[in-house]
Image 1: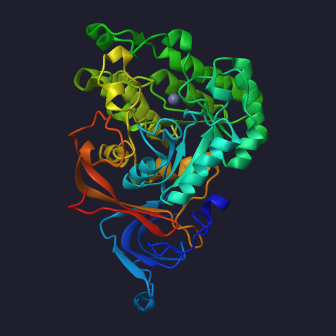
Image 2 (image 1 turned 180 degrees about the horizontal axis):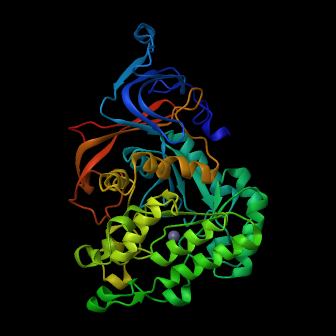
Image 3 (image 1 turned 45 degrees about the vertical axis):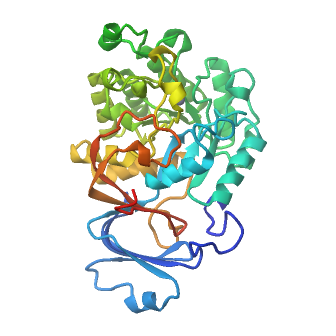
Length: 458
Ligand SMILES: [Zn+2]
């Protein structure tokens, strides 16, 4: 796959990072490559690839002399740290083209690298919508020129994400789209969704479904329940999500096409997906850190910074999400990083834009699941790297010969959320001031260091 070729990208030869030339050793970290390896090891990276992995205590070593003889080498001391296959966020909004005041491909890629992500999948609700070869190629070319993290465009299911005319999926796949979604809006017409899933299946693409019954959600602003009543806001019932989850499961059974459920927020949806998986339906699902961290009560404290679609729900829903993560019903954790300007958030709740940024807090919030005993570290790495790669057909893993996309996490480093220091252009986070534990300290893409934690710098 050309996306992962070590020579793909800018095409201008070696850059200031010593790309394709730098030799990197990652020493003494706990390597977690789910299903393959979990132990303390040294990794040697050359020419953008992993060339050697030596388990500590195995009797052999990496031959230290070979490293210091290399003209450009770097040794990273990873003792006490976790070394994982590059994290992949399969659901972000980079906002370019068209909404560059919220985020650009460049600021979004910097935000991703800072957050420990080696790759992101960007949703098509830009302006113009990514429903054509031109827009897909624009995003790919821009990301290649930046040469920060990998950007995989998700193209639209329907032209203009209007749910009326299907896009040309063959053309979009050839231009570099890795999946299809009308995210931000549901495909309300079931016959159209059936046709889309069949066409996507024949091209080995997955439809990512934003599950929302528009007639039930109506003009709701937050979850329909006690807090909405107390605050006097119109509500969105959980059924507006779960009805569409159930429909898409039925369509997957009908068509034998894969379907991936985006941003699961409700207990009813978790139950529906669990039942479908027990019947071997080809369904996968993701949730976002805010759905396993917050509830509808956050609206009282954070106002519009706790407004998103689907909305934060009850504590019972939050618990169901955690159970779904723990038992494998929910395959992936994605951020749904949705940058908005202050002008779109510092207004009346009902009129404010939906969504929060998430790239720079996701790892720290997700590590809490490990601390709380919801997930083992291995299961967490699966949900933030292995499974997104599997769902989208991307290369992944820490094995000799593979592209060196690597995330290094310090699980003990304290992290106080301060959005002023974020790389994202937007500041819409409900986690401002939160004191978290654990954060990414290195992000390597194709053997290049694209982010390195500097204690005084950030
Ligand atoms: Zn969505």
